[in-house]
Length: 127
Image (cartoon, rainbow, N blue to C red; front, side):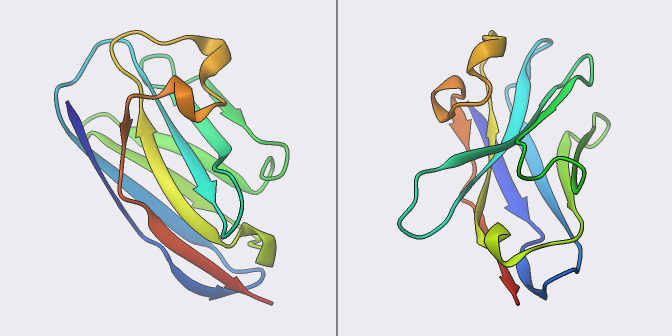
């Protein structure tokens, strides 16, 4: 079981930046992926970004492409999400997720593609 702990959320004004972090501990695998999802009140959890840990391949939701950047630090077992030019519609609880030892590329944009989840961190963008 992988433990994930997010941090870095907060209240910012539109146009500002935030960097979320997700520290991973527990079992680690040589081939896995991690991602960021978000959930606004009354809405379903939606995909934000994902990264294949070994190759660095990344994917983004259209709504954040060009504004958000996902990255990882293997030495610290930490995943990051740099969020720039924040908008009010980015307001949500952001969750970090990790797959198991195997994953399906086509499932990385869906919550069901992941086996482990963090507790979430609130991001609020005021307009």
